Image (cartoon, rainbow, N blue to C red; front, side, top):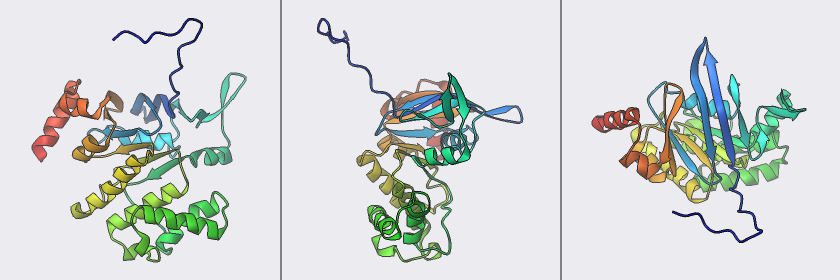
Length: 271
């Protein structure tokens, strides 16, 4: 298709910068690269599904993005801010711990396990981040927590402690907790893997709602049908590397890489 004409004297419009830019990100343990030079751009509002076999480096990728793990090399830039340091005289100087903590507020994380405080109610679990990290007054933090719990359909369960909630409800509290920090992107690390099969749907429904709201998300998942229906893009990983990056429809109908085709065939046989 020919390029659109540009009027004489006018520059072509610049492509929008990605919200999240990942450049040659690696994590090496005992001389083994569990994440190997991963590069990826994510636009605002994209839902990127990260799939692949166990041990492919999917969770390590997410943990390096929000600095739970310090990458061995490479960089992560979120909305123009380098998550690993500050440029001084052309060199990247690592941030102090307090600066890293401030930057990490913009990246929400939802884990396989819910990591809720057992002695706190759902409302308190969600409000604690805005109170302690953002310094919000209790009333304001709890008002925000109520809004987010309503958003994940838990308005009737705010006073309950985790042991009074189902696994699916606990995971939705964890999602509300991430949302309460108003992050620019949310990372989901296999959010349904710890759930009984009958509870998976309610969590996926919440994530689908966030997608409709325009939340930018990276989701590590083994739910292939969900990835196909909700994802705007599919990242296929194996051996620590990103082997394929395709629109969801294209990936599931015509994967380019033989390893991806083999993976999908194996998944199909298991179902």
